[in-house]
Image 1 (spheres, rainbow, N blue to C red):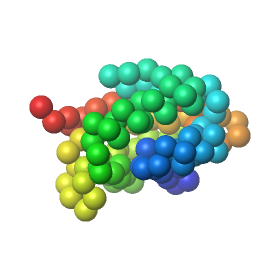
Image 2: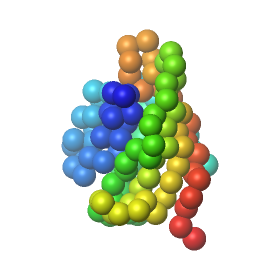
Image 3: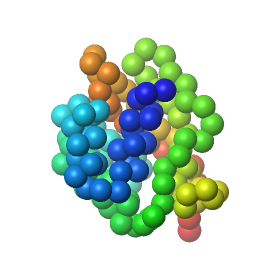
Image 4: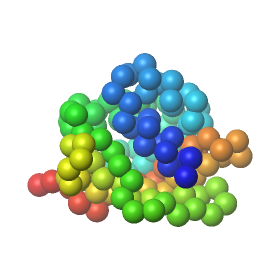
Length: 116
């Protein structure tokens, strides 16, 4: 599912310039990202959130856990965050809403498993 692939690619981009390019290419300019810890609006704020997570979990990667599901402009999927090739340390569930162009418009995230 392309929307989920683009979303995960953005979070996994280790290079800050690449991350910003992926935001521009796949996310609406006024995209909203909200989870239990943060709410961010627009590319700059979302980039700051991603940068913060990447600094908190250096070398970790986001992966899809199970199969994504979608209908209309909505996609939902579970994701894991952990060292490559290992069991994820953090697991969450996101709902992504696409705009009329197929860009990521809104993301509503939930955290299912977080380290203590």
